[in-house]
Length: 169
Image (cartoon, rainbow, N blue to C red; front, top):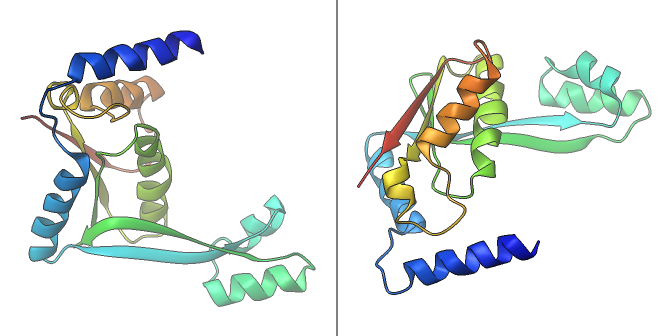
């Protein structure tokens, strides 16, 4: 624990006085540009419960039927949804300048859910290259590291066609 605090402290000292790229401003710029070209947020709602067998049984049902089936089985339905930032023409785009943990969620949950649900044919993940990430606040993912993580999983994982795009300054 102590070493990670020291590393963070050193990183802050190293960046002190330097002008950093703002992940929030970059996300806003991407959002504005994509919306200008008719890319829109998309949400898929569904109901879950603690019973895995019941989830498998209701997985392909419309949300209203899922809830009824879960209640009929005596379980408590829990409302949930998957949301993706931008969808157009069966393509989903996630722009990820947030924390690195969100990339795995995008790749292995969001894109996959929309693909399995037959709402998209391909997912696109936009990430900073290491050269840009090193000029941003801490905790931001970078293309090369996430590409490594995907390749390490082996072919076919995640089970959705993906394009990973790295941007640099």
